[in-house]
Length: 166
Image 1 (cartoon, one colour):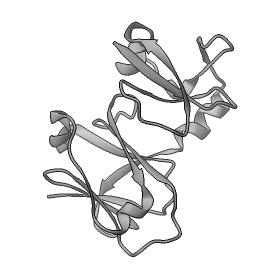
Image 2 (cartoon, one colour):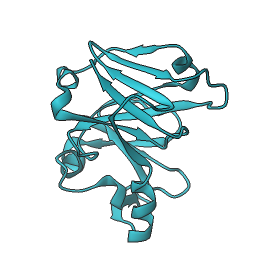
Image 3 (tube, rainbow, N blue to C red):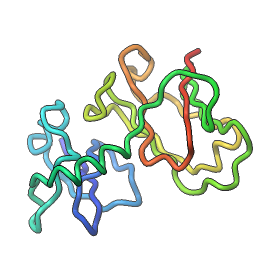
Image 4 (cartoon, rainbow, N blue to C red):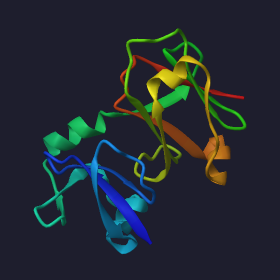
């Protein structure tokens, strides 16, 4: 099985690992499952690594790790936020008010409960779609079990987001 390891072209830092092509804003290399298995199982955290010149994984320094880990923000239950995410028969995303100032792609990670290193899937879409109620269907059965998953905003351009379970 092939996995896509996304990285920043300038710094060569790993930004995501997925079994599907999802990110258009980052470069990627294809790796065999055996090469990324420790990341998938949560034994290693990809934010601790970057690529060398031959695209081998190498550990980066602690200071860089702290900056990258701050870009994942866990979405918690609540109702009063700039962006509301509703988990029901699908995912629904909507801004609390019409929002013209936030442009670009919104990116979310659905993971195993409380573990951003165990990715189930990514969800991404143009931010303007959230001015209405933007619906995204579940892709995997595990997404339906809200008790066993977490949702993370990746580099959110908005102030707050909440999760509502229906």
